Image (cartoon, rainbow, N blue to C red; front, side, top):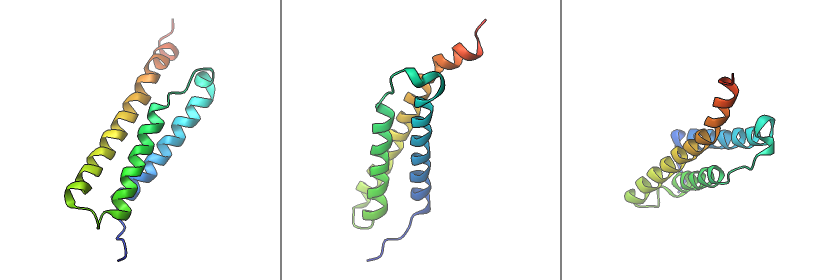
Length: 100
């Protein structure tokens, strides 16, 4: 059976890959180049990508409940990844923009 492409899932996966690339780039250059990179956002984003890939390619063969759980898991992983990304950079923004 041919898998129907789900546009929303593909857009979410592409946005996740772009976010992962931005995280990697911003962690390796500039002010954060000397600091340690947290692996948690990378792991959470990869987990979200795995959930989205399972949903895209095996979604028609999985029960509806599993499909819904994969969607919720992908969203929780992406929100958590973004939260960790932002919280790690709050002190940087405070140092750069509010220094006397």
